Length: 228
Ligand SMILES: Nc1ncnc2c1ncn2[C@@H]1O[C@H](COP(=O)(O)OP(=O)(O)O)[C@@H](O)[C@H]1O
Ligand SMILES: [Mg+2]
Image 1 (cartoon, rainbow, N blue to C red):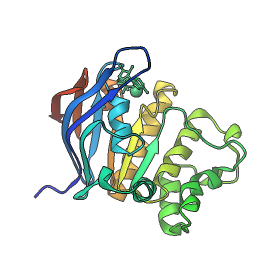
Image 2 (cartoon, rainbow, N blue to C red):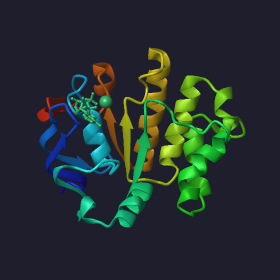
Image 3 (cartoon, rainbow, N blue to C red):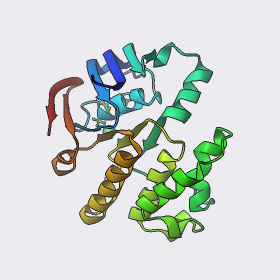
Image 4 (cartoon, rainbow, N blue to C red):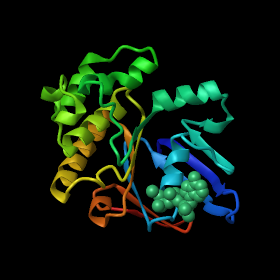
C-alpha cells in the first residue's frame, strides 16, 4: 500500500492585489506525495510553483481546498499548532540561502531547533553534516563560504529538525551548473538516507529528471505527472 505523507485536495489560491485584477495562481490542485520519494515540480515562470510549495509548507494559506499531512487537515489547526507543524514537519530551502550573517555555520544549522526549544540529535546531525560535506565549516561564518557551501549549510539547517518533508524552491538557481549538480546530488542522497520526502521546484529539466516523479504545472493546473 502507498504511504501517503502529504496530499492536496482541490487546492486553490487567488491573489487579490489592490487595483490589479485578481490572479488565480492555483486552480484546483490534487496531488499525493509518498513518504521517502523525490518529486520535481516543473513549469514556466508564473505558473504557480512557488505558491504551491509555500502552501504545502504552510508558509501561506490556500483560498480553497485542503492540505492533508499524515491524515490531518493542516489548515484546520490553530495558529499555534500550525507554527509547530511548520517547525517540526517541514524543512524549507530557498534560492537565496537566507543564512544569518552574524551567526556561525553551526548556529545557523541549529537555529530551527533552538527556536523550538529542542536539543539536536547528535548522531543525526553528524550524519547530515558529513553527507553534505560541511563538517569542517561548522565554526565559520557564512561570508567565509562559497555559494555552494552556503547552500549546503541551508540544506543542513532545513534538515536539522528531522522534518518528514523537505521543500526546496529552485535551491540551486544561484549556483553554477557544476556546483548545482553536486549540491543536488548530496541533497538527494541525504534525504534518501534519512527517509524524507523531497519536493523540489525547478525549471531545469536535467534537474527534474533526477526525481522519482515529475509534476508539470501550467497556469495553476497540473497538466502531467510522470514517473521516471
Ligand atoms: N504575493 C502575490 N501577490 C499577487 N500575485 C502573486 C503573488 N505571488 C505570486 N503572484 C502571482 O501568482 C502567479 C504564480 O506565481 P508563482 O507561484 O510565484 O509562480 P512560479 O513560482 O511558478 O514562478 C503569478 O502570476 C504571480 O505573479
Ligand atoms: Mg517561483
